[in-house]
Image (cartoon, rainbow, N blue to C red; front, top):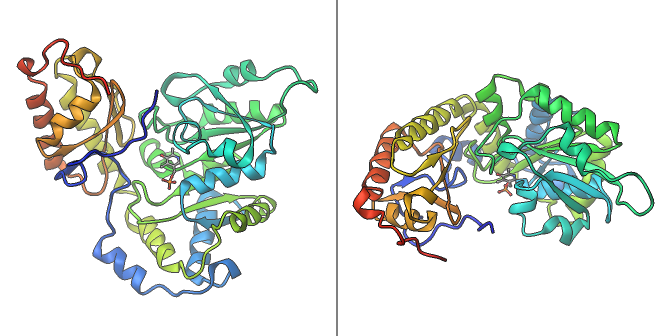
Length: 365
Ligand SMILES: *Cc1c(COP(=O)(O)O)cnc(C)c1O
């Protein structure tokens, strides 16, 4: 059973905030850019700053068209609504955001039959797609869409290699499916791998980018694809209430993020690596080696649940997320510096000292 990451009491106020890269606050310079943005009616196509952002992201991703949306979740939902009809099969990793963290929206809104694929680190290969598809018949749902998550959140921020992306895209296309990339943390993948955003997006038909994760903007995501895809997406944006007004001030924050907060993601990745190194020597804690800014750890052998660990760390002024009973998560971002990482490692060491991990102390929630 997965639990939605929800910081418990005390977590929001901890000084060392490792619970998510969504909690960053806009810097004074970002706020200045927002304050000075030229504005207009977004849904009439008259907000110059939104238009500039869409053009910039379309070029970045090598897609002809793009639209500004409130969130990555709305990008995912609109992509599924455009690519698939009710009853069509949508294939995605079983731990993907659309399955684990969007409150069942794919079923509630689009009526797609979302099928979860297994595979290490939130990824799968062409064989897994092949195996999930039924022989074409009027009894079987029509496979219409494959979703890949770059980076894979519950895969521990793992990066899809370019050849693997192409391999699964080729397989999807061979079966007449479109492929959509949930690129909430695409720029983390780009910075970590050195592969260009354009090259990664070239493998897929449509792609999104979220600005309120590691990029540090307070709001916004961009969905990109062919002109026809974006045309159809506009009708859903309108239907869902995602058509907006003078949101250029948010688009300005996103443009600022592209100018100032992309290259520095490497720093977040270094911090995550250092954190994983520091934690790997602690008794019982099993660490997944991070490729980007997410560190997952299994607490089973420590004798305590991730909830207990989270609560103990909160007493040390450190916040993490308990994802599942024995699965904890720490995420690095703009507001986590080297000093915070060292403090976090010390806090983990304190709360996992042998005297504290009494067998049988695991609390069930
Ligand atoms: C956060 C996230 C989203 C959704 O983005 P929001 O802007 O929070 O709606 C989608 N996919 C992944 C993998 C994410 O981590």
